[in-house]
Length: 172
Image 1: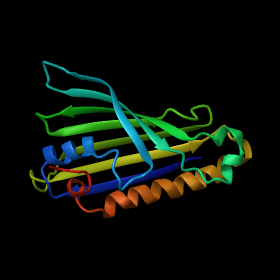
Image 2: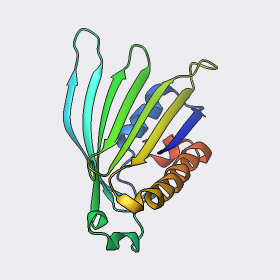
Image 3: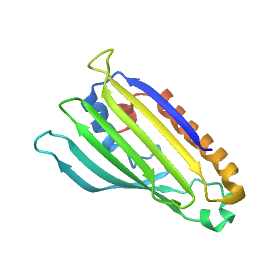
């Protein structure tokens, strides 16, 4: 089965400003679920100028306490891996992320793009598709997918209805 969420948002700010804000957005006091983010690899392709980054985010386990009675769900933190490819010349950044925790029971993947808006080159489009599929938790599959779907939709709605990320994500 699985749950999929799609987001499309236009920010009325230039690409460079929005991407810089995104890369600095966590941790912050507005989202207590993200504990830390560390860059584990960063390199620039000298021929293309593309910057590749791999980051690991440590997030609080948001699974409800009642479901954490099941031993596989009883972990304090969840690790996510994010890879990004920033192409400053083409003014786009592709992002892929997935969950490193519970890989034998679930798969969580997100693919996102920031790009210069076709409407206005001083605006930035954000497009994201996220998918969660629970496969190895037996009778809990359906319950966990329902919870995960609700959590994904709330996060997507927060992005879609938010103020400019530049205001939320600490732009100097």
